[in-house]
Every structure is written in C-alpha cells, then in structure tokens.
Image (cartoon, rainbow, N blue to C red):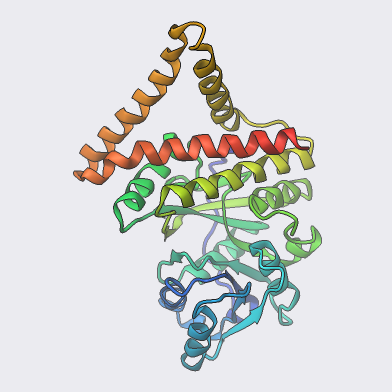
Length: 336
C-alpha cells in the first residue's frame, strides 16, 4: 500500500468551521443515518457551524424524512437530491455547490459510526500536513453472527490483503486509503470522482491525484467503525463489484496490478483449473483441499481468539471475498 515515510506532521493548526464542508451520500439508509449524523456532530464546538449535506440517491425508505427531522435540531444539516444515485456523483454534487470559503471537503458514509470530533480532526490533519487528501483507518464491527465473523476477518491479511487502512496503526504517506478529507482545490483541479465508476472510485481518484502531485496522508489516530455486509449474498455482490472496479481502474490508466491484487485472481484460476483437472488426475484436488483447509484454520483461529462460535463463519466470509472479487476482476478484464 505505497511507501510510508516516517516524518510526523506538526498538528498544531486548527481548521476554521467555515472552511469545512461535509458530504454524506445515502440510498435507503434509514437504519443507520441518524446514528451516523449524531456521531458526526459530537465532540467539537466548531461542528455546530460546519455545513453537513446529505446527498440522497432516491431513497424509498425513511432516510430523507429522518434527515429533515434532524434538520430541525441541527440547522447546519441539509439534504439534496442526487439523481445519478452513485456515491461518486453525490460527492461531486456537494463539492460543486460548496459555499464560498470552503477549503476542506470531508466525505462520510452513512454506514459508519464516527468518533467524537471526527470531521474537525480530519480537517485539522489537512491543515497540519498540507496534504491534498487525508485517509483514515477503518475498524469493522458487527451485530449478527455472520457480520461479526466478516468484521473479524476483513481487517486481517486473509481478508483485506493487508491494506494499511484496514485496522492499521501506522500513520504516513500512502498511495491509497479510506477517503475522509479532500483539499477542495485539488478535488476540483482533477475534476473530482469519475462518475462512471460505481465502485473503486476512491482508488481511481487517488491515482489521478498522485499524477497531479497531490499527497495522501493516512492518519492512524483518526479511526472509524463500520458495519460490513451481514449476509453471504450481500458480501459476494459487494466484492464482485469491487473486483470489477479495480480492473476498470487498471485498464483506464494502463497500470499493472499489484501482487496483492493478483493473488485472489491466481487463486480462483487455480481452483477452477484444479477442479477440472481432477477429472483426469485426482491429485489436482490437493490445491482446493489446501485452500479449504486454510479457510477452516482461519475460522477456528478466529473462533478461539474471539471466544465465539460465530468465528467459525470467518472462513466462509474470507472465501466469499476472495472468489467474488477475483470473478469480478476477471470478467471486467476480459470484457475490456
């Protein structure tokens, strides 16, 4: 995940409230949106003056109703329509309507619970570092049994492949991370997100930002909790789209995949090849059996570590991520 430097920034600077703008994309988020917004508005007096804009992609549940209700309590909260529905379009829309004096755009996701003062911490980190973008660490949490197992495995190398922002602890300059803050001038300079990307728009943006000379600072002291997918079907659909998005990104920029991106692809090809080869020579089944054993071992390890039977589903969650991501990647690569 990029090359880390060890120069610590001076974090003495504070961003003015009027220089910050918060964007929250939503689509049918009635279960999470109130908790998300209340968490964002806690912990710093400056937050009362920070505009928070919810860009809704046509929710058919009570999302917009809840936001408008909260708007009576928080005058700095508003909601706008996002006719293109995608998250990338939502952030672009908020950026285009930014009031005069806006310097820092903070992206927040409705599925997350934010620590007190998160928004101002992100903006302050941008002041201190002068970075074009600040990214943060994500700590997965869950409620149901499969969601817990998913949360426990996703932040490990077997789940996310060792991404620095997935449960990481080291701050530094990286080439990608979980998007939190943008210098709005840089954001506009490179025309924001590519709205043709339904997934992986963050990595695609980071690639163009680097080409434009912008630096990305991962602040490991700023962390957020998020809820991963709660079912196998939802997780598979998510990672299939992630795989397609990553392939589109590489194709667009004529870039080579990294080793950690090739591993799940090679794994899936190996599983398919070995399964077919087993019809000729059963010895080929050794590789699928090895992979299944690794997933089972991970399940047992997580169950013992967390002292929960739910951990036995960790291997299922991990395997779902690997196989669906690789399937999406291969499909998009072949269709280029």
